[in-house]
Image (cartoon, rainbow over all chains, first blue to last red; front, side, top):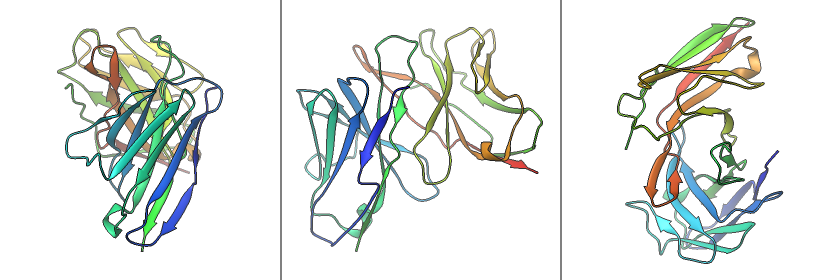
Length: 117
Length: 113
């Protein structure tokens, strides 16, 4: 089945530094990928839609200059958290869809737990 | 946006069927219903989706009412490993051919031995 891989699975960084999270579709091409954030005991919140070869579309309230998204190929999207602060500590999850037809569900990565100290 | 309403929690005995309800009374005619589950600290796992017909796969069955205002996810023989948060999601068109999944709070299903 379709697999979405995220790397790293967890990361600890110092406040003020930047962290890059990778999301790869392993056995399919994805022109669109989605980035979510999840705080403890809360649901997933969609942050942005990543589009291959063009700018990402950010949800209302999400700072595009802080959460940089690059979707340079059909199998890779990256999320960079710039100048991270403790309040950015969260579980970040990406998602992609292996096909355009209605028979396809959306596949999620296993998530990246970011801790900013 | 079509929104969904789910009970915050449910319990089920191991080996019995788990029936998880979802209300989506504002759903429009071309919006699909998706079900996902999330086990603690993992990414969501796809279960099933449908438009108006009932659907069944190796994991579960999805029953959608005729007026499409509600649906039920059925896990026929729940196991302890089915304990998770289950999300009922109506896929939203975000413009043109773009769609996105917006998660609500879901139902925490606890399967008891």
